[in-house]
Image (cartoon, rainbow, N blue to C red; front, side):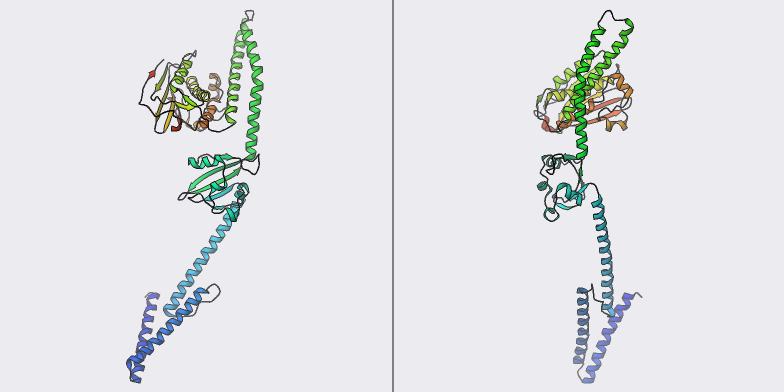
Length: 443
């Protein structure tokens, strides 16, 4: 028999014994009901006394010993004692975990801020308080937008795209830069990670200035060298054995001039990440011009197609858009064999405007695709040098698209070709999408 069952049988036996004693006392006194009532009243008083002792002990259990009571009351007190010990154990463990968490987050070099679904500050560590100038007593429960009013951060929150961090310049110093990245978790909660990137930004500024200055300083000497080489190459008295070396020097000088031109363009684009406005651009006319440029090459793919599936125009900075589209088409022409083909396609839908440049070239291994937009990154350095590639074209494309709120998608299969697609938001379309107007030009 279980102890709990034995306890209840014992309690029922005690109640039955009370009834028997009451009836016996009433029979001796000549009044059975009076004896029974007195016995039950004493039993009730005993139960109330135990209940009072239990209630007093529950209120003072932190420092008082549990009452020594048997039966059901003793079992109830034992259960309460076990629950109290278990609660105290879990509370101590939780306190230890919280202290360890506070010590570990205090040791982090980055700031951590926990936000609820309403973007109110729930908790932050010591580093976040230093970087964002937060106060424990005053700023808990405040919305993060009310404390960080930088436009870049507000636009970052409004985009709901937290894949990349945003860099802001807080008020605590002119040369200070903070990187902020939000990580959603739970039921609409947000984890804000804050890091000081002032040193990296200063080094990046030094690098940009150096590249820009060096490019400008090298441009003039290269122009002079190219001019003299052109004059020497046209000199009829030039030794025929020197024609080959002079031609190679001219080719290398032209390649270096192209690299410097791309460096200057990239430095200009990197000066600011602000979104540009612009005017409507006739994409069909631009692609037709790029097609003529490809066909004017001494060696070009056998087939060059332009497909215009929408009359919608693109709103943007025309020189930058021309530079980005030209780099994509130039890459496709360089890495596509003469028997291959290139297709430039422009269309629009509810998600915005899209330009795809597809080729039947060599293709790109999958492990190289994430790094294609890095400056000077080459999948095949030997082939890039042979085709005159600078390794800066796709970096320029990335920055131009960022300034227009667009993104680049790359798909490629080895041996079959690649497709580079620019996705522009609907706000970049000059007018609603017209009916599909398919036109194709083939070389």
